[in-house]
Length: 143
Image (cartoon, rainbow, N blue to C red):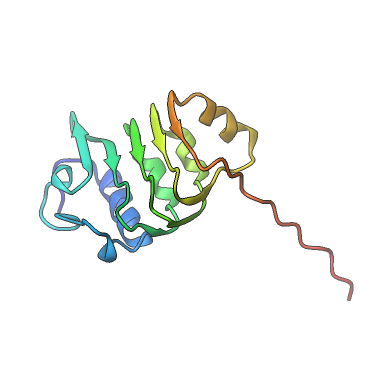
């Protein structure tokens, strides 16, 4: 029922909320209520699109959903100091025109994919954990 951003962006915000335990966030004012996603706590919009998510130290837990890549106008993503936010940053993020990405103080890691690393180096204001995701190789099993 959100009317101020495209359906794909609304779905991405909903996935972010549910996948990061939004019902337990420190401040979740407005999330999943009403028709104006741009009025939800930490969401900033311009010209009918989500352009900024400011969710630092808000109790996010779990993994970031792949659908975050649907926020195609997102310029700033601030997730710092959400210590229970873990796992790899989704590869879909490389489609985002971010100029600010802060995920320091989390357990998030950057994929080792060269394309992802190149994308990260193009972000002007980056505060990262410095962690890259470990690749797990399972040995071949004999029958």
